[in-house]
Length: 192
Image (cartoon, rainbow, N blue to C red; front, side):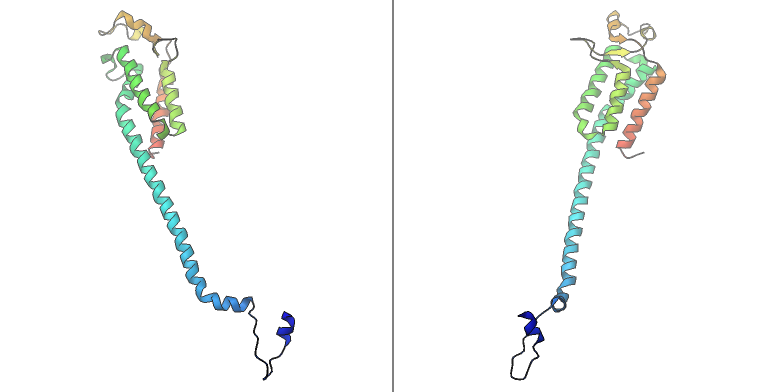
C-alpha cells in the first residue's frame, strides 16, 4: 500500500499524499538537535562537577582528620623512637612512661584507622612490632625490645622495670622501620 501511494503521481483531481521519510524527520527535528545536545552535555558536566566537588570535600575532611590525629601523636611517636634509639631526651623517660606513650599512640591510630591508607597502617604496625613485643600473656603489658643494660643505670630506674623489657632489636632495624613509617605518613599527606 505504501508503495502504491508513493508511486502514484499526483493529478490535478487527486489530493496530494506525502509520506515522510527519515530524512524529512531529521530536517524537521534539526533545529532541536543542538539544544538537546547542549542540555544533555550540560547535565553531564553538572554531574561531573558535583561528583568532583563531593570527592574534594571528602578528601578535605579525611586530610583534616589525618592532620588532627598526627598532631596528637607526633610527639609521643618521636619519643618512642628516641627512647629506643637512645637519642635526644630519652633519659628523661621511664619504661612505664614509654609503654603509656605506646598505648596513647595505639589508641589514636587504631581509632583513626579508617582515615589511613593500608600502606601507612602496615608501616605503623611493623614499626610498633619492631619496638615492642605484644601478647606476652594475660595481664602483661607489651615488652620494650631493647637492651636492658642500656637503661638500668639511669637515675630514674626501678627494679620493677626489668619485666618491661624483651630481647633487643638492632637499632638499624628500628631506624629503618621508622623511616618507612615517615615515608608512609608523607604519602598519606600528599607530600611525597
